[in-house]
Structure formats: C-alpha cells, structure tokens
Image (tube, rainbow, N blue to C red; front, top):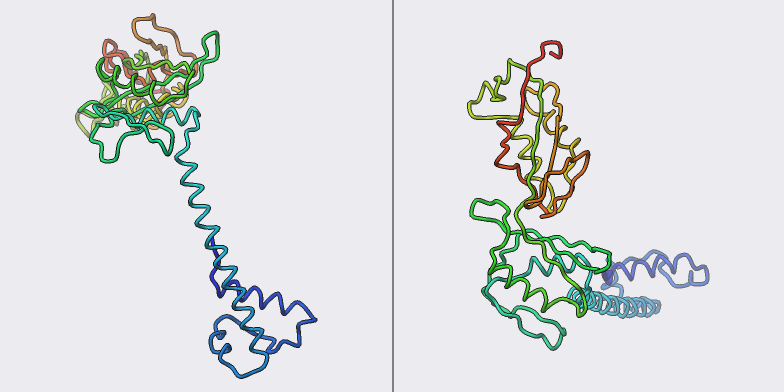
Amino acid sequence: MARTIIQIYDEMIAEKQLNATLTGLQPNIESGQNLLTDLTSASKVAIWRLIFFTVAVAIWTHEQIFDLHKLEIEKRASELITGTLRWYSEQALAFQYGDILVWNNNLLKYEYSSGSTGQKIIARASTIEVVGANNQIRIKIAKLNTAGKLVPLSGTEQNSFTAYINRVKFAGVNLAITNINPDQLKLSIRVYYNPLILTSTGELISTSGVFPVENAINTYIANLPFDGVFNINAMIDKIQSADGVIDPFVISCDAQTGSTPYIPITQNYTANAGYLEIDPSFPLDDISVIIYNPILL
C-alpha cells in the first residue's frame, strides 16, 4: 500500500539526519507537518526542503501506480482459468439452471451473460482426483430441497449441469459426476444415562419431545462438511456432551451407498454421495438402546 507524501518526506529527513555530510542543511529537525510553511521561507536553505518535497511527491506517485498495477494483476488472476480441483468446485457452484453460456472473447472462456436470470441450484460441491486406468476428476454435487435438506439434482437438472460443466472444463479432462441420494447410516448405540434427567426412552424430563442423544447425532451429521469425513469418536464426543448422558457405547456403525450392502465403519467414513443421513428404515429411536446403570452414577 502506498505511503503518504508526509510519510515519505519524514523518512527522507530521518535518513538525512543520519548522514553527517548533510548536517550543514539546517534546520536539523524537520518534519512534514511544517513543510508547507517552510517552503515559503526566504531562507536560502529552504531550497533543499523543496527538493525533498518534490522527490517525495514523485515517489508517492510511483507507489500509487504500483498499487493500481497490483489491483489489475489480482483482478486478472481471479479471472484466469486455473483448472485446479477447487476451480472445478467453484464452477459447479456457479451453475445456473435454465440459463445459457456465452463466449467471452477477451477472457477466452464461457460464462453467463451479465444480468442472467438462471437459478444457482447447486448448494454443495466437492472435487477429487481419481487416479487409475481412467484418470478422472470426480465432482460430487447436491442441492437443497424446500425443507433445507440436501438432495440430488433431478434428471433434467443433472443433464443441464453435465452440458454446462463439459462446456467450461479443460479440453481432454475426463469428468465423473456424482449426483446420488445420501449414503445411509445405521447405528446401534447403548447409552448409560442419568434417570434424573432422561426417561428410559431418552427423552428429556424437563422438556417434553426433546431427545438429547438423537439430537446430538443428527446435529453432528448435519454439520459435517460436504464430502467430509464421518468419525465415530467425534460422534461419541457429541453424544457424551448431551444432557443426561453418562457413558455412550457404539455397538455397531454401518454405512451403505445406494443398493450396495452395508459395510461396517471402524473409525472414519467418507460418503460416496458426499453427505449422509440416518437410514429411515433404522431410526434412532429404534436402534438406540438406553440403559441405566446405577454403578456409573
């Protein structure tokens, strides 16, 4: 960031004071604050002050030009097509359903025209590189339904997105789009609880209809980053902090993608869809076994 003229002038004066050969230039103590009045002085040494001021203005002007140049470079850099994994994720989020792409001959890229009215329907996107026989860039996407829940795009929406991403992508890049229902999570948990706080069904005694253990699990899953890692210990920590919980114990934890068989989760799990939900066939109020053990109180 460019310095002010006064800052530059004062630095020059400070440097002069350190140079013994310039001590003849009086007064020895000078600052930018009284420079303007000094310049009108009839003193024969006032000329050097004018020279310092002129040089300070020239340096300030130069620094202003550098600042403008930096802004132009940063703006141009933000417009460049980089082709990184993050760039592909950003392109996915920029998709506008129902709008057309136009070619920008100056930036040499496809983009939506100014004032376009398309809907940005993709709420979450992540990109990973799959190395193998068919090296791919895999883009996971999801949208929000009216209830604020992550769901896959419809068939028509996915077709439109596929056409869009194939238009903006780098030539020769093999893309794979993952747009599927959330992976299903099946839990079996035993929780030793405090009967002064919770009922035998896990409901909060003080507040009817509130189930702290179920809320802790659901909140943990909902707050996972898109395509983030589900961690059993992190989930247990959330359960442990729930009201009335003394000691939680995970009996089993399994996950399923699509119609494939359930697989056990030993520690970490990354959802194939990019997001998880509790399998509605195995709701938490059915599979959570809550037991009171007075020894633990």
